[in-house]
Amino acid sequence: MIRIINASPEFGKSLTEQEINDFLTYSKLNVHLGTIDDKRYPNIHPTWYYFDSANNKLYVETSKLSKKIDNLRKNKNLYFCIDDPNPPYKGVKGKGICRIHDDVTHNIPIAEKIMTKYLGNIQHPMAQKLMSFVKNGDSVILEIIPLYFSTWDYSISS
Image (tube, rainbow, N blue to C red; front, top):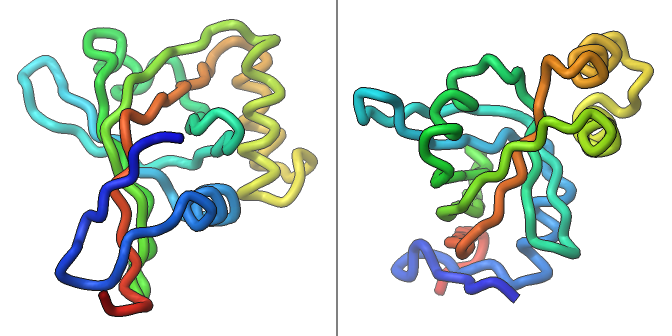
């Protein structure tokens, strides 16, 4: 299991391993990815994701021409955060290492999982459009390997 840190010990509690898995698997919140650009400024990129709980990895589909890809090709380190902005606040964040997958046959099943999670099915018009980018090789899949999870849950006081 990956290391879990209590992000806010003075408020609430940390999430358990099962709570992290459930939160990341079933939440339809965006993951916010933090990368560093050429001028060493941080860039934040909100996007959809799929969480593979068996391997503790996050996956993101994005254009191979996006700013985040440009940044990640130069520096594979990133920061991620998925948080519920509605009380009681809850979330998971951490540092990770990113691998960029260009292989269409690898990317299609992962992109389908992302589209199904957020749109309900791959027949949705937006899913069809996004999947066409994946199938044409215009999109890539980011595989995020977390180094740790830093979590908080304010529904229960510590």
